[in-house]
Amino acid sequence: LAKTTQPISMDSYEGQEVNITCSHNNIATNDYITWYQQFPSQGPRFIIQGYKTKVTNEVASLFIPADRKSSTLSLPRVSLSDTAVYYCLVGDGWGGTASKLTFGTGTRLQVTL
Amino acid sequence: SAVISQKPSRDICQRGTSLTIQCQVDSQVTMMFWYRQQPGQSLTLIATANQGSEATYESGFVIDKFPISRPNLTFSTLTVSNMSPEDSSIYLCSVARLAGGPPSTDTQYFGPGTRLTVL
Image 1 (tube, helix red, strand yellow):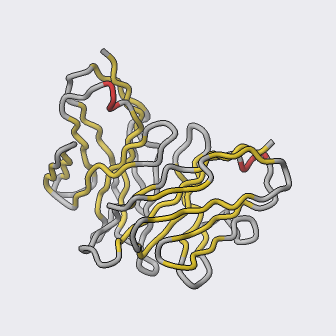
Image 2 (image 1 turned 90 degrees about the vertical axis):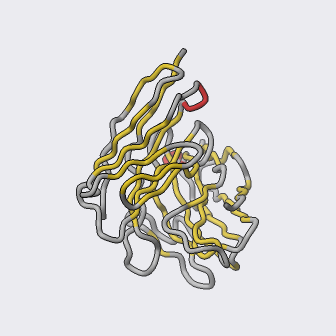
Image 3 (image 1 turned 90 degrees about the horizontal axis):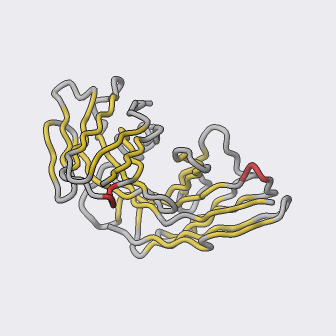
């Protein structure tokens, strides 16, 4: 199973760009990279997913280098409401013996004024 | 995306009793999962709920302790049996691969969770 390594915590001021990097050295060819956000007392919420290069949506950007052994979630101009735990996951789906999504420790982002 | 509801949202139970948690999705989904999240910890996959057949359990989780049902493509239950204080946790249902939708890879949608406290 591909495992991920992220910083345990990060601090940022409101209005700054935050980049959270995740290492996944054993990522398989079929694996996609997915990021989730979790607020206290809520289930995780899908943020963004990618396979290679760069993906951008209305919430974040995801940068994936050519070797795919790491990825960086970029949150532009964070606000206090972005304070949450961010999980990086790799996996390729659910068919048979395909690798499963494993949640790592996540990164606890604290945004302050 | 899918809208997922769980019942109950929270409960306080006595040691030795059992609690059944329901997960309802507003659309048909191919895959349904149950996770546990202990306070301050990450999520741990308990099992994959398979429609019409026995659930597939992860290492450390057994059917006798966590029986799961999935009678159709929109509903599943997880029972926490013979509870002990160590079972106090948040239990989350998630779904993936919306039936009839575009192909998706790994995108899971999570329910709000059920907070269980065992005394």
